[in-house]
Image (cartoon, rainbow over the protein chains, first blue to last red):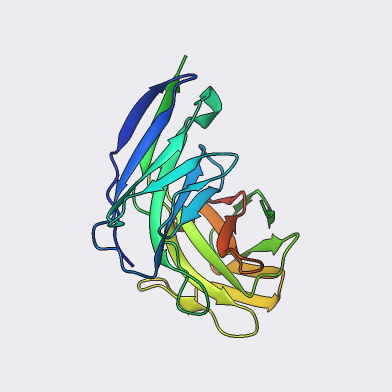
Length: 113
Length: 117
């Protein structure tokens, strides 16, 4: 699976958009980009995933560059409860081809009042 | 999203005893579940992939005889830490893969905090 690079930490003001970048320059054509977050002492929470197209759900938007070598997770209006470690993961999708999620160090997002 | 539960949420045991942790997918069937371990201030480390009705696949460096995994049904996987030692104290987290519908997503349980005295 392709490796990802994320900044170790970021700050965001409450109510503003949080833009979390991720580099995955060695991503393969059949690898999906997944985002999870982990609030202290809890299990990771699924946020969103995508392959090529931009995706949006009730939690966030995922913007994937045309060459798929990087992506950005956008939390449109960050709240204090969004303070967490955010993980960007690429993995082979579907079937029995694997599906393992290998976690890197992630980005520790601190939302400040 | 789909719900995955773990039981117990925390456990304290004496050195040398065995501890069983259950992972259940509550509203979907999961042919594949995963077990992770997380030490303080570190990221999650994948221990093994659990497939319903077959043997688990362990990651390199994980002792299969120490961490016994059973995936007897489509909604339940168990991890047994045998002959636990203080260095096995950790946060154990499972995930279940939901391949139904148009998505293919893993959902995580809340974790089990194991303390070995």
